[in-house]
Image 1 (cartoon, rainbow, N blue to C red):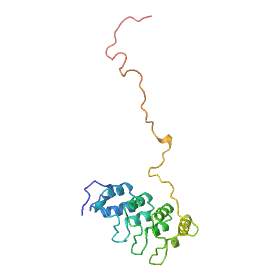
Image 2 (tube, rainbow, N blue to C red):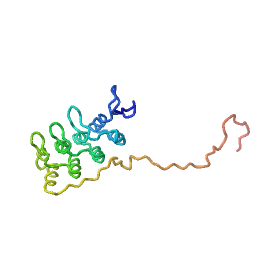
Image 3 (cartoon, rainbow, N blue to C red):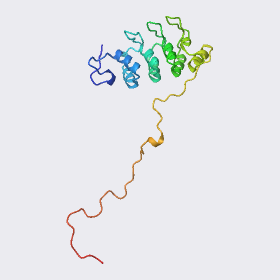
Image 4 (spheres, rainbow, N blue to C red):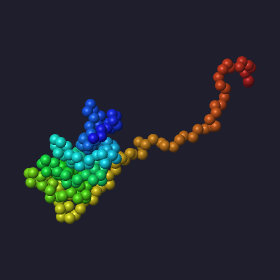
Amino acid sequence: MVLFRRGELARCRSVNILPMNQCLLKAAEDGDLSTVRKLLKKLPLVNVNIADDVTHLSALSKACHGGHFEIARLLLIAGADINATDGNKLTPLHLATKGRHSELVKLLILNGAKLDSKNTSNLRPIDLATYRTETWNILHNAKRGDMPELEKWSEVPIIPDFALLATGKKKRKGTGKKKGKKGGKKKKGKKKK
């Protein structure tokens, strides 16, 4: 298995350098978007459907549990299994619903997540949502065939105009040459009246 070189990815620096798959799981859990992007560029070497050895959660499940919309979107584009289950048969949709991450719930539904998948307690994602909340309404409407619409998400936060520095260069007066005497001793002479 290929390992990262020291200093290549900030999240994977430690005494024991983690393999890329483990690093993807950690970055998805922590919401580290730049690391996830770097790892997905090495896709043949990285398994997007890798599951954690302890919790059996996939990278997509960890991103959904933490509410990391952009990471979940990138993992879905890379081919992550949208209906992957953990040891308790929880899907990413169960985890996003439980965390009340309504935009993630919309993303998962629009990408084909099963609305009727049941966990080991025989609960569907809608059963984990609080009644009549936004998340519950999204799941209820999707079950009836009314698909949700995603709001426009911007990866880069909107910066107000007053916070931006002026990009134009200031014009200098003159040709750039200094005018006047360059120092040295002053000449003694008569003062003009």
